Image 1: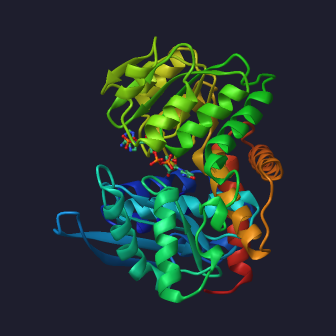
Image 2 (image 1 turned 90 degrees about the vertical axis):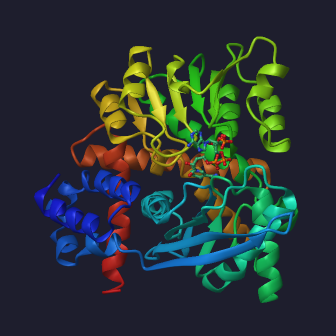
Length: 445
Ligand code: NDP
């Protein structure tokens, strides 16, 4: 790392002790930015990096709620409003027991660059809670969401901060959150949340957007080597929103997706994952992957273990951060891998990324490859602002154009800075320069 940037990075780490995912995200971005500071000394003089690493606002709050037996629980809620240089803070809410400030800050930090890459007018933020939705009834989920919003509502708004979903937060949760916001504020402010239901201000293609976008990005990478998804053998991690739609899109392009996972294990289905069955089990019944094995002849379930033990030519990590380490990366490479596109945020550890890059594997980092979700959220905001709703075809066309644009911008930026084919460098520099220019133009804020 450039020594000027290393000093700033060390200060950031010391100021934010114990936040290891945030440290990892900051370090990974800083490693790309040395050449930018050679060309733009004004970024150093303006202390852009120091400012960028300090969120504009961090909100931590108590979320009390009662379960169905009347017992009182207390969780912790977070919203980190990281950077508003390009637009209102924008980023999802995650409900998962692992959530703490370091996770929310890593996600919010990544979101700044991702949102800049989309070319849409959105800043970066993220939030969530250490609430565990698993096994909770609809009524419990609703009471939790209502309590969460009872504090959050005062910090958000269509021109201020626009949350959406992430792990553990899908259409059901966005519905309960929106209902409570409307009730408290007495405003039908559609643009305050994205990922809404279609009949009450949502956008077609938003549920599919992150997974579809990841595959579109991967397809563009494959094209640079004269290849496509047709005939590829694909391994996916996760079986939630991003994974399911990535599987569907990859198979629609002629690939066979042979495996996917959840936190308890993975399934292998050599005939290609049956997306309708997977969606029924995971999204409708909220069940486990073991049920897929029971209902799909020829499929097998492996408890525990790593889905990355399954060979594939394309890997799409779509579950969670740091789920793919250096050993798993080496195994994938030795099994014939040619491309990786991250549907999840920071799923590959830094050593995994090194393994991929040293082996010459096409590697699309999450902040570029999974930007289709937030980009379509921005399209939802556009539709809300004009009180319009677009067709599936039109919205999907816009998503495709945005993903191809992100791919091309990353590729061009990487080449411009002497790292052709390095999408990590392209994404980090491409996102950073846009935000840094805007920050300097807006004065010392
Ligand atoms: P979901 O909650 O819909 O699904 C998450 C999936 O990942 C589930 O299959 C879950 O398994 C699995 N998972 C979660 N934690 C672990 C773990 N520790 N080990 C193994 N598997 C795990 O979330 P999404 O699909 O929305 O999000 C997945 C990833 O994509 C996250 O990194 C998120 O930040 C990122 N992302 C999401 C966007 C969106 O639009 N939703 C946009 C951009 C990025 P189980 O069911 O067992 O918990």
